Image (tube, rainbow, N blue to C red; front, side):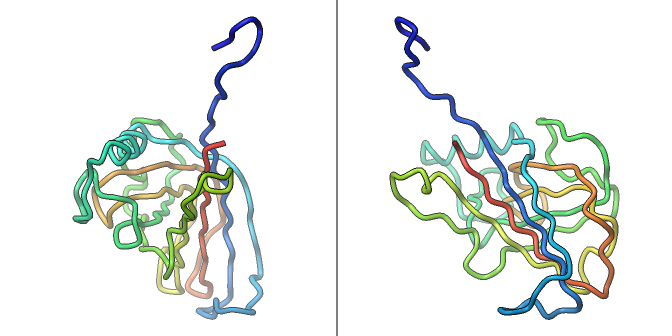
Length: 179
C-alpha cells in the first residue's frame, strides 16, 4: 500500500536456499569432506503448507504425528526425495514419484530456528541424511513434510540432483526464510 508515493508496508517473500552434500560410504561425520556439493535457491510453497503455518500462528495444530496439522518439529519433520519430474503445483500434497520416493526424519538437533526479533530470526533449517541404504535412485524432486506418511507437504522443488547409489550418503539441508 502506498501513501503519497511512500511504501507503507514491506512485501514478504518466501525463500528457500538448499544444499546437497554427497559423501562416499556412510562416513559423514565432522571433518569429512564431501565429494560433491550442490547449492541452489528456490522451491514452491504448497497451499497446504501455508495453511499449516497459519494454523500454528493461531494456536491450532498438534504434536501427534500423522495429523494434517502436525507441527514441523524435530519429532515430526521429514525430508522427502523422489524420482518424478512432474512440475510442482501449489495444490500437491505429496511427492509425485510413483514408487521411488522416501521420507527421512531430521538429523539430531534439526529443524533449527532461533527465536528473536532480528532478520536472522526469520529462518528455519531442516536437514536429513540419506545413508547408503536409502533412496538409491535418481533424485528429481524434494520436499519438506510433517509426517513420515500423509500429513502436510510444506514445499516442493523439482530439479535433477543426480542418481544416488549404495556407495554414497547424501545430506540434504534446506533453509526457509521470510524476507
